[in-house]
Length: 112
Image (tube, rainbow, N blue to C red):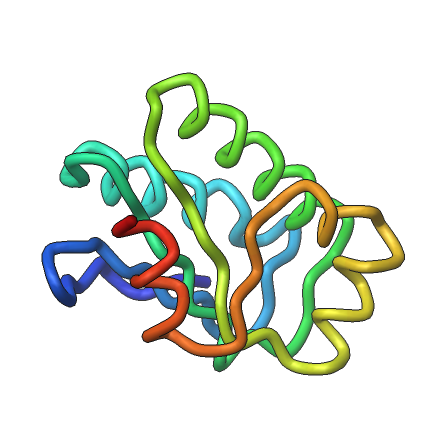
């Protein structure tokens, strides 16, 4: 699941929480869409508290990334746990999306 977007330095931040799977992927997508609507040009996804992501969660992330790219909205992910990072690397997502070690670095990356 995700939290309601918060803002830092004018950038909407959505935090992914606990698990991202078929039971909550659509709700996560909806929250990211809401953040994109409120964004002028960037969104950050903070994954500090995400402990599990399924293939459905990965598909939802890919869909959102494509949608944001089509709207010229920059997106960065940050603070992936080792397990989630491994899933992103194995699936090839790490070469497709911008992943940063910290929230501050993700905000800086999308704010350039």
